[in-house]
Each structure stands twice: as structure tokens, then as C-alpha cells.
Length: 149
Image (cartoon, rainbow, N blue to C red; front, side, top):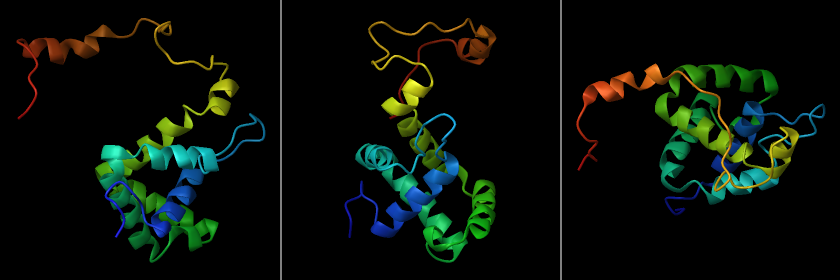
């Protein structure tokens, strides 16, 4: 049985397949897909606390697919993905977030976006002023924030 932070070989194959569906490679922008080996290695190395939900999402995908998602043809994969989006819940959202966060920190992707290859701090990045009213519900709570115990 794999460690709780590891995926089975079948789950890793399905992760690679679904990652390519989420972000396919682009010749036009000269960027890899999210199924690129370096991006996949980053995903697997940084799953951490998300491992259980990602595994749950991949298991749900395999159940919808009736077996490994990687074994299906493209039309059937698309149908399974559509059903997964509708029924995957929080586990599906976690899977997508994990794929995107690793994809958008890859140097090749950052370079294609014209971003400097550096950590965001200490220099930081300039952000346009946003809609501060989005914080009104937080302000309305008043008091201090407490961590749930």
C-alpha cells in the first residue's frame, strides 16, 4: 500500500491524462502541457495535504471511466471529464487546483507569460487596485480571527 502522500501507478497515469486535458501543450505559445514530466514530478513531490483529496478525485474519475481514464479514447475521456466536473465536488476542485498551481510555476510557462523567473518576494509584483468591497463580509464579522480547534 502506498504512503498516504503517494499515488498508485494507475492513479499517476490518470493524473497525467487528466492534467493534459486541463492544460494541453501549445505549439503556438511554445509551452508544455500539464502532463509534462517535470510538471508531473512537481505535482507528485508537492501533493502534501492534498494527496488524499487528489487520490479521491482520481478514484472517482476511474469509477466514472469504468477503469483507467488513460485507457479510454478521446471522445470517451471527454464524456467522463464532463461527468466528473458535474459530480467531482471538492476533490475535483482540489485536483484542478493542484495541477494549475504546479503548471503556472514552471519556468517555461512563466517565461511564455513574460514573467521574470524569480520568487514573488521580496520584490513583489504590482497588482491593480481591486474591489475592496469584497472584504466587507470579513469586516462585518468584527473582532479577531480565531483558528478553529
